[in-house]
Amino acid sequence: MTAWFLVLTLAGGVSVAPARVPAVLPPAAVAPAAAGAAQQPAATPQPAAAPQPAAAPKRASRHAHARHHAAAETATPKTPRTSAELLADLNAQLHAGLLAHEDVAATFAGDAITLTGHVHRAENKGQATRVARKVAARDGWPQVHVFNKIEVD
Image 1 (cartoon, rainbow, N blue to C red):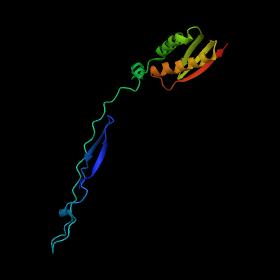
Image 2 (cartoon, rainbow, N blue to C red):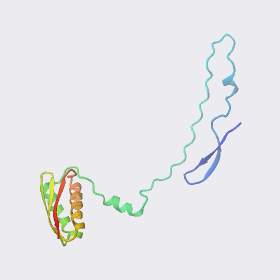
Image 3 (tube, one colour):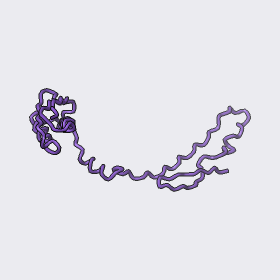
């Protein structure tokens, strides 16, 4: 007697294959031991390892735009940049993009960045904090604390 089972493939197909495990033990495995000999447990045959289905090739990402973001991710450098370089990078980022028309300045002392100045919209105050944290992490200062003392006009 042969047992059958269904195999679901990664490609979405279904196939039927015979099971590799015997449904009934062979007669030699259950035969009584010879008279006068010590009774040893019969060795049961080990089932053969089932073949593993071929793994589907791994995609780089689920979404096309994620490839761009993965390439754009910035890794923390092996050695942190100096505080002067961090401050120069931070001021360059603060005076670019959405914060270009705002009056924002940054100072760096110890492990703290202090943002001062004036902005016209409250959203830009939060944006300045996010920019400061991102630049600090990119330049190798992930534990830096940002104090936001920017005033909203």
